[in-house]
Figure (spheres, rainbow, N blue to C red):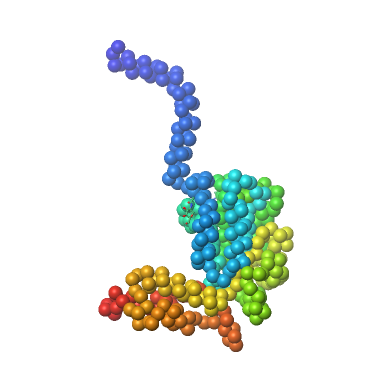
Length: 344
Ligand SMILES: *[C@@H]1O[C@H](CO)[C@@H](O)[C@H](O)[C@H]1NC(C)=O
Ligand SMILES: *[C@@H]1O[C@H](CO)[C@@H](O)[C@H](O)[C@H]1NC(C)=O
């Protein structure tokens, strides 16, 4: 046979068989392609949604001080959900973290993201919305609601397991979150589709938590002994009556926020732990030691920073005004690593 004939034959054969061959291989090719793609790019599977409860637990234990109640509830609620990745839920887990600045709301959320997704906070399954940036225009509330709904709806068709974070939640337009109702109402199809997702609202503010913490302190009550019931009694009347995003909130009234977790202002003993961590991380791990820097011991270094922290209220200064927020900055401006001293 000539080469021409062979080619002809080949084409002849293929022209009849090719569609069949294609039909046979394409699912394999497709699955292969998907397998390869999901190896490299995030997909809605356990390679990318890792749900590492140990990591969550360890990070929170090591880095969050003074919030035994909130961390315990969060770890149990999330841990139970993660323990069986195949279980379906009829609504997503919805948590609201309440508290003043610097007490750990953002750290907890970041840690949750990092232990939930392989890509951590860069995951495409994380939706971070902050009132500083999102829904700030003067558009009417209906427009904002329909945009928010279409985002969530659109994402829920891609994957059922997302982390939605609403930062500075108090300042979102009042009524916006009512638009989340059908994603959270028991039994609604949209809520079921997002059943494995987690919604976190970070509701910032001193009131009414600081007063509560002060009462606990004055009565010598342990922070660990507070209860979810007490948290709701203290927090809910306040947030639904104040002018803010939760004013008259349907989510609150219908009990669709599963947990209201209070993060209490930090006391001296908690702040000292943050200072110690910061000194270790920023100074001692770089090869310096207290004596090199002119201090008798490590506690001496901690004392120097503690003295620069603003505690309130004025008559009995027990709480740190900025929690642990500004400590790294204070540590870095107080101590100079000896290696670089000659350059000054
Ligand atoms: C979960 O996290 C822990 C602590 O970071 C780590 O040691 C462990 O290997 C992780 N487990 C999985 C399955 O990735
Ligand atoms: C998913 O949510 C993001 C906001 O985090 C939004 O920009 C995007 O358009 C949404 N995707 C779909 C398919 O709706």
